[in-house]
Image (cartoon, rainbow, N blue to C red; front, side, top):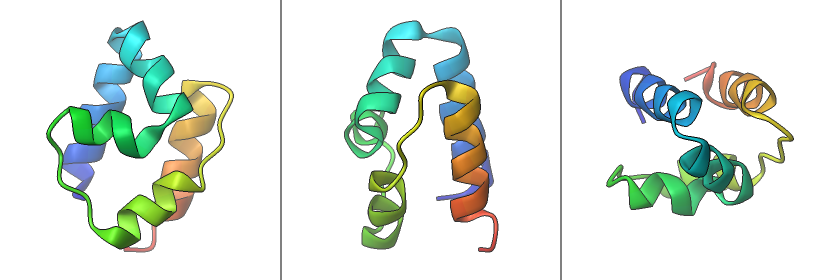
Amino acid sequence: MSWKAINVILGRAATDEDFCQKLLKDPVRAIKQQHFALTKDEEEKLSRIVAQDLADFSQQVLTSFGKE
């Protein structure tokens, strides 16, 4: 997943409370529902994220995907 895609997803979550809650509850499903394709590796990384809010989620995404 490109950084452009990550920015689109995080931007949408910042402006759409319903999407944000879905993203926090089940990031893989929420992202796929937005028609983004995920590799198995990306799905695994996202499925390990447990965040209380968007800031926490964003930080964990940076940590998980920052070395790619």
